[in-house]
Length: 86
Image 1: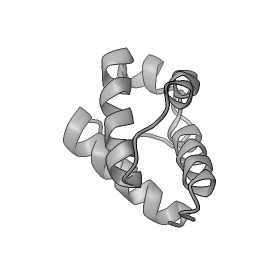
Image 2 (image 1 turned 30 degrees about the horizontal axis):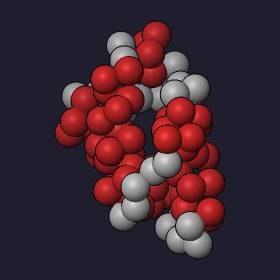
Image 3 (image 1 turned 45 degrees about the horizontal axis):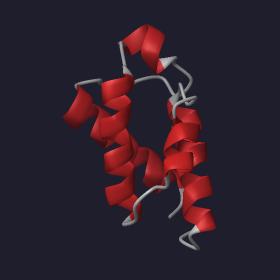
Image 4 (image 1 turned 180 degrees about the vertical axis):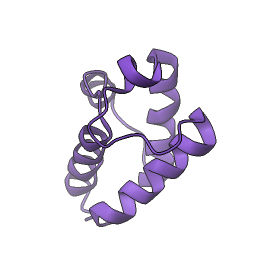
């Protein structure tokens, strides 16, 4: 899965699930778009579906520090590479 594909899917999730249209890739999602911890949990579930795998507790905890789309993309690429899906 290449970064452009991941980005397209993440932006689609943000439009459909969180009603956030075209967030800047470096926008602080919490400050600018009101993205909260419940949204984060829902996004993690979407990432699990995207990767077709369940995330570990540690992976979920690490995700809580993510604040931008670029960081989400980096995070997903890391998870995919760890699972041999890149």
